[in-house]
Length: 374
Image 1: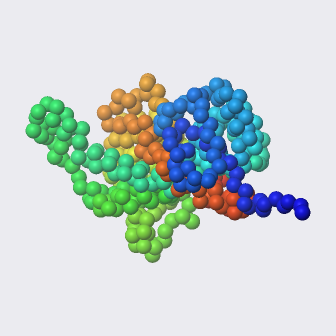
Image 2: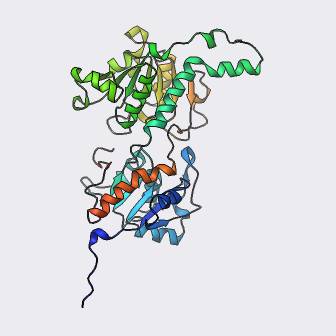
Image 3: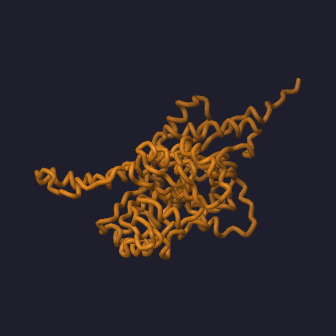
């Protein structure tokens, strides 16, 4: 009797993990003890959060072979970009890559991607790490707003000086969040989480979207406020900048968003133009505004301060003027770090779809559009 092969859909392909995030292997094994895993441990990849370092030229031959044979890969976009820049055939068997970060722009900015001929079809799919970063980034944004309004740093300094309310106006002259408006540039999962958190403190929320297709109608606004925390949507960037006390950008890095706020755009937020000279918070991508334009906006008092977790160049160069500005807060891209415990939540449901669809990527959720850049 001839032995028949099992149906393709029953095959559980090996998942290769090449990541700087500690604990991914254990988290995946805890969630699915039978998941076939191949872990690449390499001294060439080290660091965590905003301090990841990767030298593809230092990879061992064993690791190179494992990566070349990988069908499914879990890794950081910047690591994949550096690997392909070094050797465009380094992932020659890849069908699906699961990003461990929300932003995938390092791949689109890579030499590998820019060198591809027009209309070239990339043979593998990339999925975003979606649905996990909204709550922690919302926490970070609201914490920064509260910290800025209540001036906790002044209170800490008073304590060091043993001076009761020594800072006077700096610790007593604050606004209630319920009296203020927050404009959110980018109304995806993270933007909606920030809106919900702001609404919990009574803030009015205005969401800026680039397409009318994504804007709630006037009749839907009441429902939108209760379900996604947004009181109002607008496609008018000037309106979004003028109506608020705080602006938070969660925009991704795409051809449409790069430089969106550069070249005097923030002038619309100045009191002379009818704005409130708001504070700018950036947790999206640094290239939404260039540093010179940001410094000009501060000098011209278009905005009153900047709270930055992302930058055009990371780590931020030591000669950047942003470091020494009293009205700028520099944070090392840590508002929403990937935790290993979150990886199974995002990955395993898609892995099941992959297996159930004959190991094809057609039904995967959170697919990145290679043409749109996100």
